[in-house]
Length: 206
Image (cartoon, rainbow, N blue to C red; front, side, top):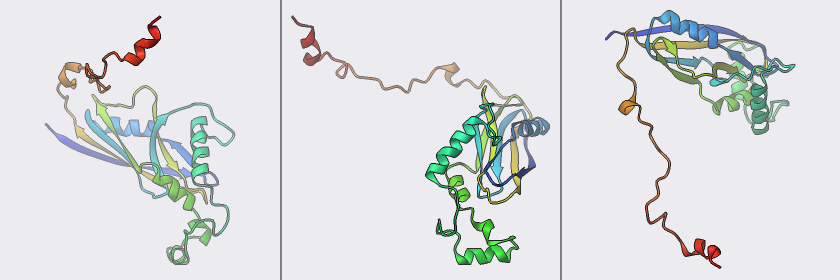
């Protein structure tokens, strides 16, 4: 059975001034199709530390910020947990050494390091997501979309997403585990745990 690796880079443009949610579902699906891989995995990974990859339902409705309602709900929650960086000294980061490093690597100003909120928010989410490929189709269920989220809002920036598809170009055997038996993980009570208790029957007595 032949094993194949196929890799592509997606270039994105974030807008700044507010976190950007990029729906990259169409592009990832095209990468999977172009790979020729029939069965395997697709990994979508961020190249950046203030960004994350998220698989979530598309909520369709857009607000005046061009955010889907579910995305803005998530942003509202993150703002409560990690407030927007609005004034110098609000967070310990960036310190003077980090600011100097920013100038050393030709950052346009100290303000570009004031993205602590973006770094902290990205910690709550995975930098990458892996999805299963079955018979040449990315298995995202009925509603899943793939989003690249840029939490850094200090400026508009070019971003990169790495998509790696690995697997075989051949068919696989029956996927059903134990013939498709439904695994029951619910708690199973012993006869003793289910036994009748006097406290329950008293109220039925007259």
